[in-house]
Length: 553
Image (cartoon, rainbow, N blue to C red; front, side):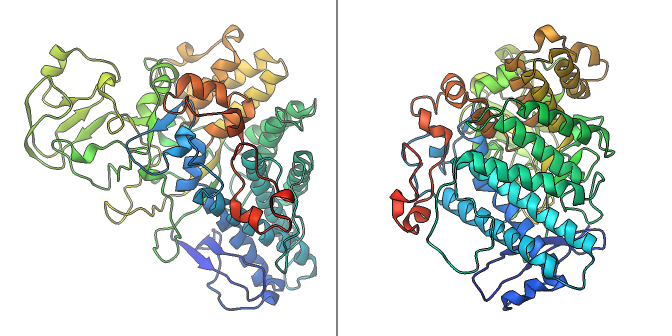
């Protein structure tokens, strides 16, 4: 399915940014429009293009360097590899400050999207030439996007500016709105959006938000709010029926094989509730989906290997912690998710004879094209056994910042060459397995251990090797919150959830100190919030007294 990204710019103060879509009848579509006035948004075509512009701001977060740095670094399951860039976001040093480029870019782009949504919501009632049903759906989509952006902002930054009306001219009058008001606005937006969104597993124009996506997001909002300073006693009870509805009423289903969920070319499947679209055109892809580079080890300097599109461009950014490898993924006999999440075999694309590098069990290795060059058994194979192999064996005892298990979920062999950074795969933002896990969490929080266990077992049985389903099931006696936390790690590693999970569970500091040695010395209590960008404080009337910085920064 060929995709396009378009651009819409207004001469007035409202900036709509990039548009994302697909150039086919069953996908989100836009036109390339430039140098136009604000009145364009008051037309039927302008309404569609403005909503698409709002969708494009999702690309500031999903599949980007900033989005993955914010969510993977500095957690219990990922620490830094050898790549020198942005390590301070893992180690929590004072380099992570209010002048951080990621913070500034994300803040500005999310608010750009929010203002676009505000304009759509305000102007839609007066637009002619479009049916009331379509207008209602577009407004609902705008409310979904606005709620999504505010939900992300409040999790990362705490109280932020809540602006629910279109800003037509620049203003310096801003304030930090209490979290309780922000959560109320998010819940209202999603509650109002749900009835007007399409009630099927995928929109007739793929990429648009659906009722299932909004219900999942609202459920997650309640689960997150339930452990926040704005919590209500019924937050988890309100989340439960939302998740159950997503599971039961839209034709969604878990794929039989966990390994197919993120398989290249299978980005549109029955488990995907909603994804952020990217393209293959360098003119319309913006910065692209970059997730494919960050989770890879330095395979390309090893004997018999050179960089290629299949194995990826290795940034060596995120390295699994010992806890992730040895504890989270310890049950590999029954659970397929380690094998199907990490690469264990590399095959030669550079034949010849070479001196060994990391495997001291043999002095040299010789490879023909396609021969195994590196094998990661996942355990410390004895030297005598390694010596019998014709390839190098990378055992856990030899893992370091360059050599470690590489996550395969985001690999993008469809790139035009081996150096291309701007990937074109859609990023799966919401999928059904996460709905099950969040439902189990909501049930657990209400003391419904039997129901939570049954819900969790659905995900676990899908992850089982053939014939191991019974061994993967647990009974309520094993249904602890520690087990639930590890289950989310097993299922969702690398999917931009972990930091946000730890933050809402209230144990980010504890678990990072316990499981992430690189981050442990520096992380402090205030790191549960990110710094407000300095340019936001500087442009506020009254400066820091009107828009104060988060403590510690």
